[in-house]
Image (cartoon, helix red, strand yellow):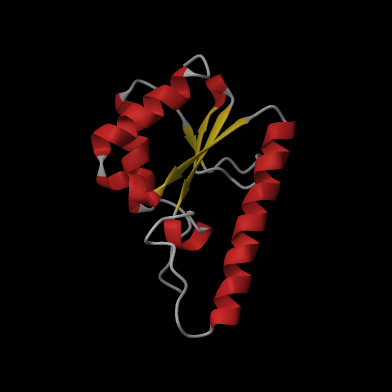
Length: 126
């Protein structure tokens, strides 16, 4: 687990590249916001989290499997991750921020990812 990085991951880079090419400007890992969102669009009051399907339990995704060994440990770990994100999302919402989640498995289809990003950001007046 020591090789697992929390920021500047490949999925984050892909999402940032797509958002930048769409003409949006953003900040990264803003410390002042709850949960340090991966991407923040201050002008649109939008926080984006790029979640790994395995770590954040993307429902129905083939990558959200539970390892066979140490099942209790993994179940507890995954539960804590999901609960933490729910708390952070509520806090951001209460502060007036819009929270978007982009899943790691969405990186395989770049045109679909771009279309989803455009639709999500357009809804917010972007």
